[in-house]
Length: 317
Image (tube, rainbow, N blue to C red; front, side, top):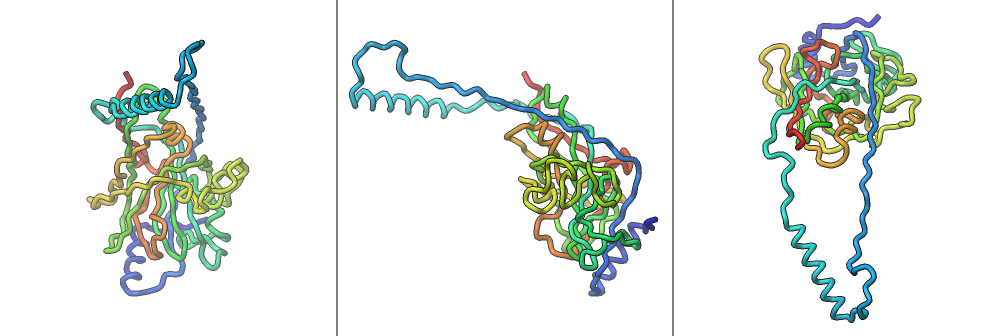
């Protein structure tokens, strides 16, 4: 049985060790286990018709155009094209408003890269698990300490159900809001970021166990499924695009909000992006070892701490 330590005690100990100039070889990450959730995938296909327009009238019996006629026609077509493109498109929304701030969460999971003791252990507080972290599933962990020590780095991925919302509205942008806990404050606190994942993955239902069929891990987005590896070779962070910063408000107590900047998604299928591929929260690539961040609350910790997606846009005409 894994022994869980008080999160605040661990962070205060780490902070004191850091200030004293000590080298930490076996970092502690906090876990909790409760019931799991079931993932749902939605697949949509968009097709656009292709239209070819002839510049000559059908059945024309007139003489063949000479070079000057051809040049004039080309010039006219170019001028027409330029004048059409100069006409500004109508904005989708005359006024962008908050459409929904309580979008249902489909599922989520944590991911840990690296390991300790030469890839022989995955440290869980004072009870390390045998084997590396990158092959383990953390789909049933409801909070986890963000940090990067000894090449162990935490990432978090989440998906939201926006099907009904997207059917009746134009979505202009959205914000991800997480809940942090027990932040280790220091002068060089690195910034968290959120990116748009570009492939499917399975959340899984384990709390640090080796990833099995239907699970995911830092090394594999869907064990036993068609997705054999993450694009980019760096877990869900490597398989993401267009990162935005996560803003950490000064803590007013033990829990505090962590909100992303506005995330604009202008191309592609918004349902596929948010409901199938989802979002990833991580440190920026290249963050140095020694980073101590907040403990991040996930789905199942407490309903009031569940991840939230604020969606902005307008109703379709």
